[in-house]
Image (tube, rainbow, N blue to C red):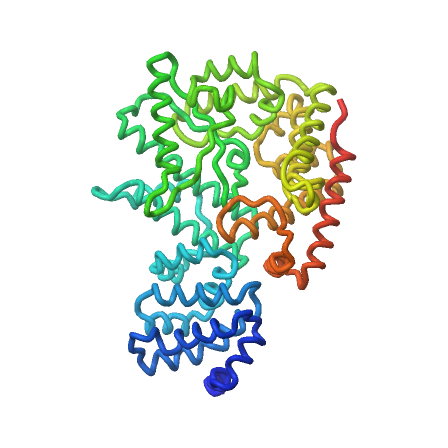
Length: 491
C-alpha cells in the first residue's frame, strides 16, 4: 500500500506537480534534492534497501514540506544534514523507526538556518536526541557540570565551550520548534546556558591569570538579569571587583579576559557577545570597579535611567559573598524611597523618546519592541510600578518582568483583567521576537515589511494568512498601549 503510493508520487511524470502542490517555489531545485536523497550523490553508491527506505519516507517528507513556511529552505537543509551524517543507510533506518525525526529536521530547517547548520556541523547530536534528551529541560547547575566535564586535559577550553554551547542551542531550539516547551522555559534555558558559559569563562580566566583569590563578580543586567534571554541576544553585564588600586588593575584584566573568552570569533564560532556599557559612566567608565566605587557612583552621580536599569541586576558569576553584598547595595539604592511624581514623569518621557527616536519611524507600528504598545510599554510600566511601590513591598524587588506582574496583581496594585491581558500580550510579542530572531540567531525588533516574509512569519506563528496575523498583532499593541496609559502611575 504505502510504498506503492510513495512510488507513484516519485514517478518522473508526477513528481514536479507533486512538489509544486506541496508549496515549493523552485521546483527544478527541489527535484534535484529529492533525486539526491533517493539515489545518493552522483559519486556514491546507494544500496537498494536505502532507496526503498527513502521511498517509504517520502510521503512524510512531503507532508512536512506542505506544513512549513519555507519548504525550499527546509528541504535543502534536510539534504545538507543527510550528507553530513555519513551513513545514509543507517540514517534512513533511524528515520524509519523514529518518523518524528523527519518532521523535526524539516521544522528546524524551516525555523532556523543557524540551528540547522549547527546540527549539520555536529550530526552526532541526533543520536543524543534519540536517547531522549529532549523532554528534559536542564538546570543551570546541570549545564555547568556538563560543560566542566566536557573540558579534557589537552583540549582548548574556548573550542570545548563553543562546541558544547552549539549543541545545547540545538537542543533548546528543537524543544522550542517542536512545541515541547513554552516560551518562558525557552528563555529560562537560554539564560542558564549563557550563565553556565560565563561561569566557565570566569573560572578559566581566573586560573589562567592566577587570580583565584580576587573577589570578582559578574552581574547580569537587562533580559539576562531578568532570566528572559532569547535568540540572538547580547549579555548586558557589570563587572565588580577589587578594593584598592592594585586590585582594580587585576579586576580590569580579568573582566577583559572574560569578554575575550565569551566574544572572540573562532573556527567554532563565539559564545555570547558581552556588552558592559551599562557600567558607571558608560563607555568612558572603568571596565571593572569596586563595590564601594559602584555605591558611590549610584548615590552621587547616577541618572534616573541608571537607577531604573538596576531593577534588572542579578548576580550571575564569581564570588558569592561579594554577589550578595552587591545585590543588597542595589536594593538599598533602587528602593530607598518611592519614586516621586517628577521621576515617574521622567520615565514616561524616556519611554516616549524611545518610541519616537528608535527603530523605523516610517513603520513604527511594526516595531514590536519599541513601537507604541510594544514590549517596552510592558517593561516600563512594570518598572515604574516597582519604583513606585518596591520601597513598601519587598516582594516586588525582582528582575523578572512577569513575576513582578504576578506580584503586583497579588498585592492588588493591578487588577486581574488588565494583568492577564498584559501577560498574554507580552507572551505574544515575545513569540514574534523569538520566531524572527531564531532564523539567523540575530537581534531583530521589527516585523518585516516584505509581504512574503510576513506570510512566512504568520505561518510559523500558526496563522493561516499574514492579514490574520497583522490584525491580531495590531489589536495586541493597541490594547497594550491602552493599559499602559491607564496604569502608568502618577506621582
